[in-house]
Length: 150
Image 1 (cartoon, rainbow, N blue to C red):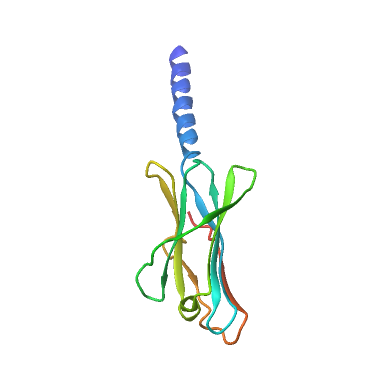
Image 2 (image 1 turned 30 degrees about the vertical axis):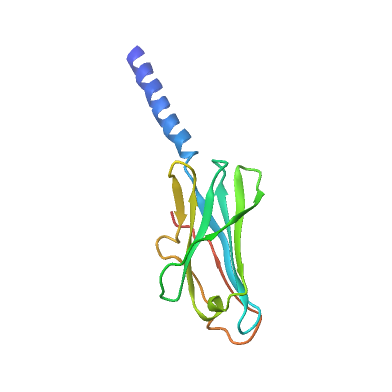
């Protein structure tokens, strides 16, 4: 009987520790990405993400490429707000860039905390895609929302 209690206690400690450790793994999720075309040569590329607040110091970046080109320098996201459930909203906005209007934009999000831990939301490896080049006229918008893949 004592042996069963000891094994039960050890299992509780083991699984409790693993669950506790998972609470300290970075998690990031795309809320919304959009390109808003305001003229034939202008517009903005905007991304909003939600992430768990597990460290004071963190780096949140949007990595993107235009068309079939090479990956560009990451764009830094900035803190917007707390959601009250230990989650934060961060956003990135890059404005008045004509190349975002004339090329499809493939992107993903990277969230890194000190110690080298990081999380990526890359739409299950397919990357997110925004493309307003198919639109004609002004005031067009291309929007993508986060996926449910794991």
